[in-house]
Image (tube, rainbow, N blue to C red; front, side, top):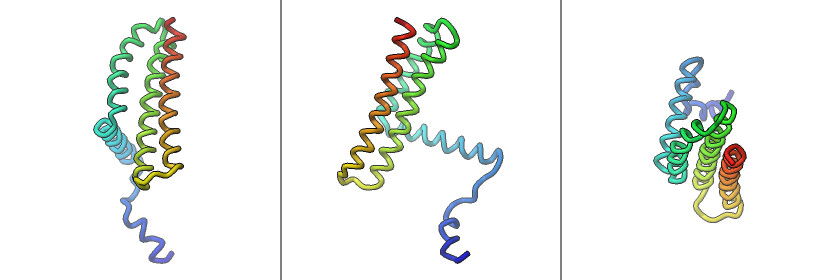
Amino acid sequence: MSENESEPNSLLPPKEKGVARLIAATRFSLAGLKAALQHEEAFRLEVVIFCFLTPLGLWLGQSRVEQVLLVGSLFVVLLMELINSALEAIVDRAGKEFHALAGRAKDIGSAAVFVALLLVVFTWGMLLL
């Protein structure tokens, strides 16, 4: 292996293994949640709604399955918002100038959040109405 081939790897920390890897992954995940809460207003709003609707869903669900569906649909919104925020950060990192593909990527990410919100409305409507 040439010196150039190993050079990029020398910039990265060595991969942890076993429990240390799980601890590191948890630390990175928590850092991601913190970043989303600090920088993404939509995520903060969805967390507030999640905190309000989760106890309501647990109370209104007549069975464990209904409770899981009501609360699970709320988790899907948070998941989609995190993915959308990550996608937007990557697109913004690539450049601030307008590009049709960058706009399309952001719009599709936003559409994923919208579809997740429709899932919440559908799930809650079907189970509660």
